Length: 519
Image 1: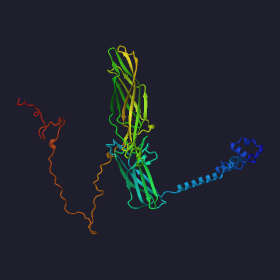
Image 2: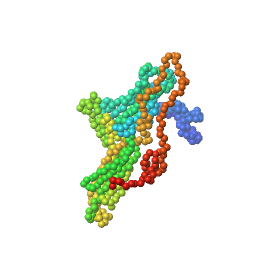
Image 3: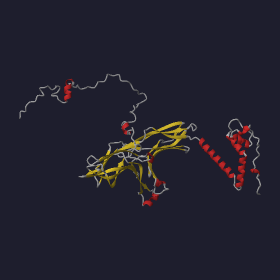
Image 4: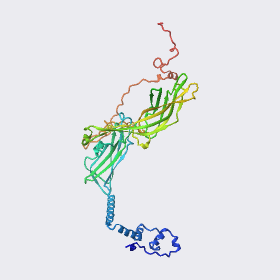
């Protein structure tokens, strides 16, 4: 009926007899007066959260919102909200119970060796030594824990990001086991507390370094597993990061010729570059002046641009199930990608010399790789993943014409050329202060036994006694000739080998030259 007022929409009357002091109070006091909550019943401090929620539930606005909700959605089942709240509370209780449950044992790995770095090229690297201790800590609440299986595996995994079949794990990755340690041959009872088991492994030098490129990924994982007699298993995984560092050598010098002109470019680059930091580049452009009898033609450098390109290539193999898509087993799909990981351009900063024979333009600049591009060091993995880097330099030169009598009268001819040069960059990790493992460790003798031989007892009554006999004879030494007569003076030591006879120094009579009788 129009004009009808709902009782639930009418707010309770509010007394308008408010003193001046109540108007000057904070918003909390004014709201409490509107909601008809006595001001003197509140504590002097801050109200608790539970008290505030109870006040909010008893407030007329809360009752009003519930009434509006029933009017707007009369057919809505409000019991679902209650069931949803109960399910949340049940899940929270299960989570709390799981957190309160403490595992009977915990596995961990303590690494003793330095960071894994393979020094040198894969063909001549001695690898990296990895050693540590596998630690299992038995909880105090468990008391004694009996293990019937305790092992650890070292695995390498190569993943292609463009597999033959998108949803097939066998096509996307391949896992190889490098080493396997078995610490138990029979069940072992461990008391509460930590227990350590040592291990070591020598990574071969030909293994590829860890990387995460745009086409593929290479990673190494150390996985430990323990199982008690009740069947409960305890696992632990730790990723290993292997790097490769090539020691720097002499700078590389390269020459490029640009026919049909007489221009010749010479570039000096370091032998290795690093993903982080800058490296110097020296460039010399000669043959920029061609002098005639009355006039000369020369090339002037207008702009120089450089960029560093990263070329990645991977061969994605197929599993036996999807080998028919690529024509059979043993074949793969080749994927290539090129991206720029550093670039810059220069419009000045070089030195031009037209007075020398042929002319010369000299430039020296700093190039670098952008770390935000996440570059990948050079590698050539046996699985088909390859990464290489090139430095591309582009020079824009313009042709000029001027008379020999007055070289200042320069006239542009309108001709211009783009000179492009490309050089290979060997990107590798920094070697730092570390050295290879075989240079910092003493030689290992495999034929030396673990301990000296023991003395077997013939019977229970035998014993060892001291020797009280005659002293043993000393070995006979041969008498050697004394060398006192061969002492050298200062003059003879400077002359080197100016001696005549044994034990006698040369005199002036010995140095007198005599005429040859044959002549």
